[in-house]
Length: 173
Image (cartoon, rainbow, N blue to C red; front, side):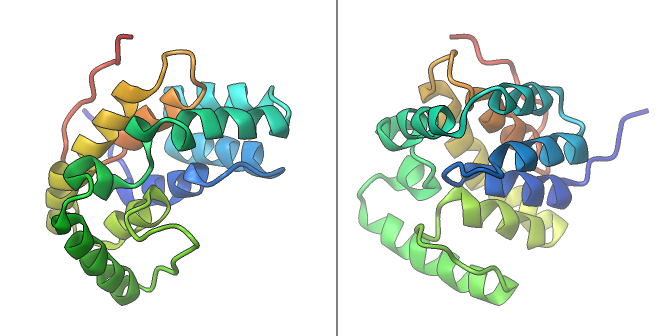
């Protein structure tokens, strides 16, 4: 018997963890780990709880901001600077508006926005979008992170929470 996964709930819990860390970040990580039951996410939550927020912020910047191959903007992983990315961003902005998901200062294709959007989609649409867009982007992000990055577990947890994308293999690097 397999466990039923609340993909929408897991994606909603994970999304805020892709924002720049603040004083409440470790608490959000713990809450997400509890909500999802993901062991890798529990290890991530324990790791970030042990770090001062300034060290966590530095690790976040190193992982995602200074490492273009691990950017959190999924359209970049699919299209780079091609024209198609612009159309993708416009389409996502419309979908976010329709779903009632407020944008932050990040682009519409940032994981902060895309994860809750997938959680708000009907099951078949969510699975298709996850397989076509999110799974390839998260795989690329995971591959670009150093094994020692505390954020590697977070990216793998997000990948595992995607609806309809099958099992996730452990990253070896």
